Image (cartoon, each protein chain N blue to C red):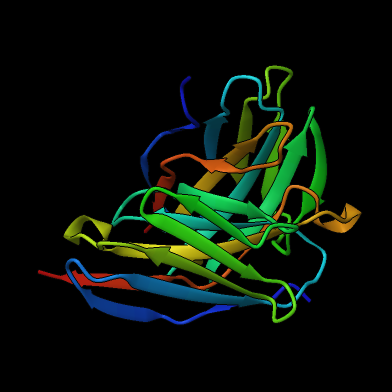
Amino acid sequence: KAGVTQTPRYLIKTRGQQVTLSCSPISGHRSVSWYQQTPGQGLQFLFEYFSETQRNKGNFPGRFSGRQFSNSRSEMNVSTLELGDSALYLCASSGVKDIQYFGAGTRLSVL
Amino acid sequence: GEDVEQSLFLSVREGDSSVINCTYTDSSSTYLYWYKQEPGAGLQLLTYIFSNMDMKQDQRLTVLLNKKDKHLSLRIADTQTGDSAIYFCAESISRGSTLGRLYFGRGTQLTVWP
């Protein structure tokens, strides 16, 4: 069974641009969660989607948004990028047991 | 609250046992997890324990859960240099406002010396 796939693995953007990250969950998993990891703040929860509905949201500004498609694939978007958005963005999927499995992450650098 | 605390560093010699400790505050935890992160990589699920269990063993890994003290530990037997990584403790809490969310500690950097 394939694991959680995140694309792209690396991104370099400049301030003010917008970016879209993609996450394909493990087959059969309907929940997708997103986290931001930085050296200063650690792992912070962004949002969680289940069956195309956002069920939970962390404390991030509205520039951070996401969606989930009918095949459970999810995307997150960050608009008007700031230097502080540079981070590793991790996606996790879970099935009926709610055990979260993570992808390799997307490393975003904002210049 | 949902605070998860763990010590930041641990150094052991190859072949010794490592014990990484974690405390949490919410008594409504459903599962407690240990994840491993190597440099430049994502989080690898090492093991997890359901909140109504006291212990779980999986090859070199032993997880102990003390619900009364809200204390979780991960013991790695016969630690190898390949075990050097950051280990994260996390909990999930089944309430409407916490669905699909894990609460993480800051991670423990394990260094294994040959």
